[in-house]
Length: 184
Image 1 (cartoon, helix red, strand yellow):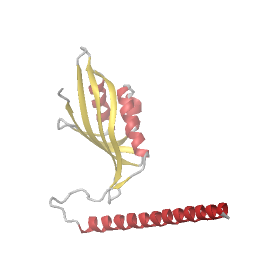
Image 2: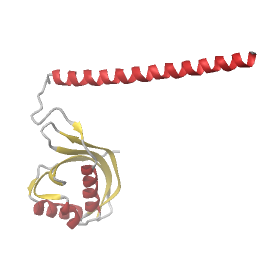
Image 3: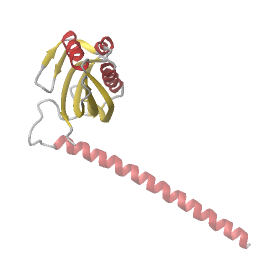
C-alpha cells in the first residue's frame, strides 16, 4: 500500500506541474499578445515631436534584399564591377557621404570602379543588417558595417559606415552611404 501511495502522490505532483506549466504558458502568450496589441495601439496614437517626412511605421522585411546588399558589397570588394552593376537598376540614384549624387547604373558603377580600384578592403564585418518595409511599400536594407581600408601605398585606416539601400524588384534603386574613419 505504501508503494502505491507514493506512486499515486508522484502522479498527482507530476500532473499538477504539467497543469501549472500549461497555465503559465497560456497566460504568458496572452500577456505577449496583449503587450503587442498595446504597442500597436500606442504606435498608432503616437504623435511625433518631429514628424518624419518619409514614413514612420516600418515593419521587418524579408532576407532576399539582405543577400543582395551583401553580394553587392562582396562584388565591390572583389572588384567585380560587372557583377556589382547587376544588382543596380538602370535608374538608380546614389547619395554619397561627400555630397555626391550619381544617377543611373553606369555613373554609379564608374564611381565604384574609381573608388574601389585604388584600395583594398580587409577585415570587413557587419555589426547589424536590418531589412525593413515602409508603410508605403518601399523595401530598405540598413547596414552598419566596418572594415580596414588599405591604400596602394600600404597605409591602413579603420572605417565605419551606415548605409541604406532601397530596393524594387530585386534591384537597388537608391543608396545612401555615410562613413567615418575610426580614431584609435
